Length: 261
Length: 335
Image (cartoon, rainbow over all chains, first blue to last red; front, side, top):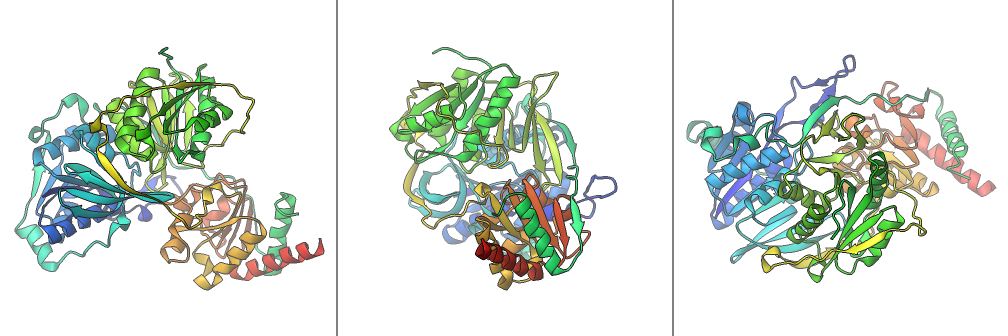
């Protein structure tokens, strides 16, 4: 079985802060990580490899720095890593991104494509299902468990209020939740191999078969009109009084707003 | 079938014949946008034996509801649902398509955007019409809620957005409202059923839906320990509300993941939000700042939660909450 895992390098958003003076986003010093849902996807692929034998490739689209994320995936046990990086891809929205990734996936070849449900920087959850639609293959999203049975996969698809067990034949695409597993750590020898023995293949626009009008900013139906940080809501009154007086203030406020009788 | 151009189309999501609340919220927003565009509010409901859902859409403001009612659609399946929604959208050619950002909406909306070759903006928290272009301005949070971005879709139609549950106001149900219900037959081929559903399970445990709660008593790191969590439950009980919490509290295992408020949790807008020992990281605030009344108790006088609170109390929440509970109990026994 040939598995390709799509991963994205993201800033750890829990570390992102707003500069209180300028109101702008502070990105300096924010660590980059493999997106958590994608890491779950990689671990799921490696477990299929461990139990059944599979070839696991990782694919990422991003700036040259994303090399680190792909090396990490190699160190965990991926067999092959491809970085799609080209100025021609920049400014892509989810439509153009999924179109570009779909072209790379066609070139790599796959039985199973695994993507994380959503990335923590954009939070769109769109690229996975969009890739499946470009490739005209079945997709199951919000997957929390994968089992291989004969010629198909049985997966657990989560909803807010329950789940489905779904049988799907390959080739197909799954988007997985980070809760699917606990990703393994990189082994020291794995890290060594990732830098000495293995390579990250760098693909540019010339390496894939795409319509230049459908990639990057030009191929993106959506545009960022403006971005801004939120203005603060006008603050109310703040009191520093004894616990007893504090409790009384709260109860009075609830009475005032008819929240209690 | 008559081609009706330039309406606002809302996808009415149903599960087991029950309309999801977010779909009704979208009808409220859709009506506002349709009025601004001098246009009609359309809805589409997909499933099997779902006529009652179509009527609910009418009672919440839809001028016309398209119904795709087929046995194959009894259980949610990505491909047939996407196909049905695509065919209706192609026939109706709306200016705008609105879909709830649920685990179902976020499955079919991206696929639809590829089929139709148009833009899709995820998880919008605000939708407005641009005065000059008449285009849709779709505002959404990014970078864990640290940044807001307004997205447009200038040259492709329809303009599609998914919207988080709990962000828009649900219109009042009015059974005197009139609307047209139109059957929209769709032919499916065996290839459309590209997966096999083996089991469908509803979670049996009663799930608390914090996004539907009128009152939320919410705990943060300042609760100190899991042993103090009952204070929240007592207060929530007195106020007929539910308990929720911050990411820190959920990650400490003090509350279930379903009860998390904020960027990576739920967006809530209760009438009352009581922030107990919550410092107010922007990821949290972005999920609750639309609440009616915000009362915050925190030890740190410079905590950002006080910037959004209507009433702020600087103090130890574990000392103050027992006194609030006591005072409420006294009020009850006196009356």
